[in-house]
Amino acid sequence: MTARRPPRADLSRLGDGTRLAQAGRGHAHDMVNPPVARASTILFETLADLDAAIREPDAGLYYGRRGTQTHWALEDALTQLEPGAAGTKLFPSGVAAIATSLLAVLKTGDELLVTDSAYEPSRTFADQLLAPLGITTRYIDPCCGAGIADLISQKTRAILLESPGSLSFEIQDLPAITAVARARGVTTLIDNTWATPLRLQPLALGVDISIQALTKYVAGHSDLLMGSATATPALWPKLKAAAYRLGHHVGADDCALVLRGLRTLAVRLDRHEQSALTIARWLEAHPAVDRVWHPALPSHPQHPLFKRDFTGATGLFAIVLKQGSRPHTAALIDGLQHFGIGFSWGGYESLVLPVELDRIRTATTTPLPGPIVRLSIGLEDPADLMADLDAGLGRYQAQF
Image (tube, rainbow, N blue to C red):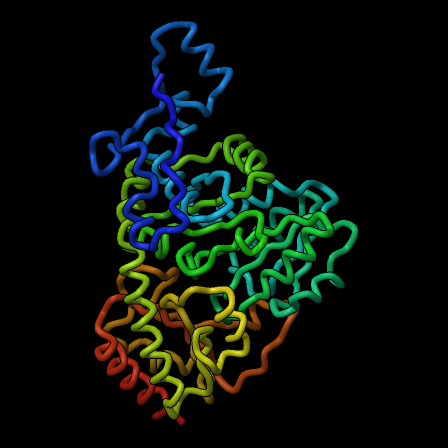
């Protein structure tokens, strides 16, 4: 039986580029990259080998759904990027990672607290799938911080966080929230897709399970779907068991593509960050823009928390326009030459999307003078993107 090799030595003291180049390489043997190993049935030489695998199904190749060397390489790489992590499981999407992680720690009669800034599919899962299972959900102010102590009830068993929120970009005080949660025996989970482990390391701040949509920045090319969940030693057995019992599996070919994207993540994130900040600063001074929601800007309400907890930014932010409503945004959006109109983000191409918070939020309100437009800044030249946006904002203003 092919044994699963332990990850290489601790990489936490190395720079981002070095960590990304070396993480998960223990399964490559004599090659730079691990081979793409596709399998359903695993063959055993003897009955004794089969019985040994049954006793320890995670010790090596067992059945395709438990993974091959290609899956192990990606799981180990992601684990090595999160100090304090015990292991990582892969999922067909980010939503699947969130859903499975919640099911791993909740049962009938429990209560889940969810930040009001959470990704809409996370809310849909809680409202439409957890509720029929007898699990209640309450939405909370993302800026509650240590005030979470007043929101946790006797039935609260988990808190789902997202910092920053991917529509409104509030930064949550993770150390304050997790300190209260641990003292009360409440599990904390975070959607860390915006930051990735290169910009925020949630487990080091007290979070129990860190979740990503690898679809976005890690894969980086808008051509696959995958999610991951990385857990502390205390939560790892529950997460691993839930992922297997729910039948989750991802293809080895997609794992190889994500691994390829992971190797260049630091270089791409730096470009996303620099270009997005250049554009965000320019937009702050634009006459059509009321405000820019980007946590790396000093004007952001939680900028001090961002500077304390994050090592940098990425390429996703939003603007609030000074007047008008959603129908007016067509004049801005439809004529853009370098921005695609579509969901998701984190790929090499820039995207634009109008946002309606009032349709989603239930615990907080944010009175605004005009519509919200979210921008995902890709790898294009910032000057070209700014010229495109300037023309679009001119079309927008011409309507009034």
